[in-house]
Length: 189
Image 1 (cartoon, one colour):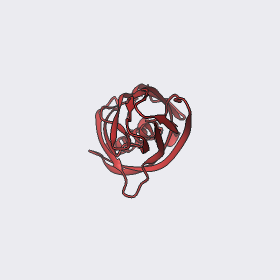
Image 2 (cartoon, rainbow, N blue to C red):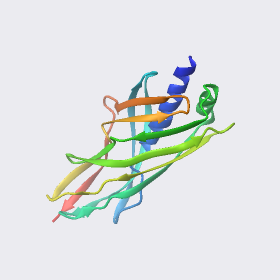
Image 3 (tube, rainbow, N blue to C red):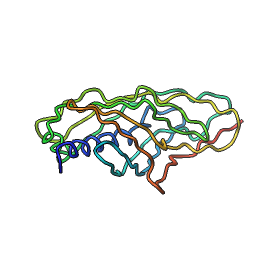
Image 4 (cartoon, helix red, strand yellow):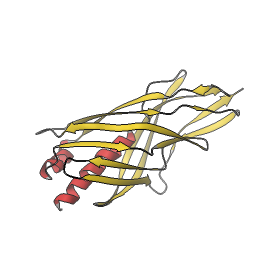
């Protein structure tokens, strides 16, 4: 495998893990932890691939119509296994950072932005696993009509991953047939 391709696949795995953490945040009142295992397919100049993603999120089980569900800070921690970190080392990558400006989660038909979704520059360790920490802010939303609303992960997103060698642009979408629903939010009068 070429050095560029190895770097691309290692970075792709890091970013897909980033996506798996998009919606993890502080718990709103009456929230329950939801877990979704799904798959995203991503393409870049290095080629494409699919990866399993685990999304965890605290979602309220019900809210009153017209009441805002507040924005919340998102923090996450990613542990990249040594074998993937070794591919980065072999390709000469010394640090990794990432940014997505268009990630949105869905509540019913609403697309709610996730702002400032970033992984700050993180040094690639000389050996062992790599721990990456990141942050963002899930936007607030209000639903005025009583009913049940599906809360879903993003259908697609783009991101730019900086490797210290070159930027890598990724375009990712849910894989065909992959589940998207995290939970159902009940809006009551």
